[in-house]
Amino acid sequence: MRITPDNGKAVLDRLGRHGQDYRDPVAAIEWERADPALPWLPLELLSTHGVDGTAGVDPVQFSQVEFARLCAAGMWLEGLLISRVTEKGFLGLSAEEARVMLQEVREETGHSLMFLEMIDRAGLTDVQLLGETGLLSWVARGIEPAG
Image (cartoon, rainbow, N blue to C red; front, side, top):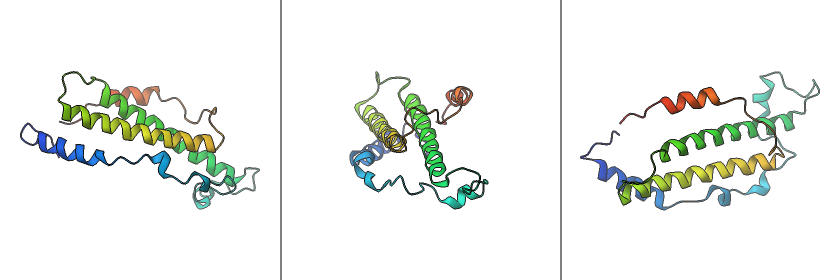
């Protein structure tokens, strides 16, 4: 939906109500179920890329590393979104606009904390999981949202 001066208040009200019932994803997940002895991605996905355990690669560990890489990519995207949402700051916003923006930042931060917890549980906190993202970040910052 395109936000216009005519419908802006209704959109902000709807978004504000949606964000009021925040549920912390870190607290909502049963972390003990993240069993390090089990694959964290379907092994069928890995076998399509030639990883079947016969070449000296443990498919369970490989699935956990790949899942952690997905989490790292999620953190990068969430960080990009947070920076875009907050780049102009909160000065000059109405209380409703600031509330919606802060609720969005809270949700994205919760997602990033959830991703970080999975990376920690995979034992990969200090491992470089993504390649260089400088070019992608530059491109993403240059894209102006429609509006």
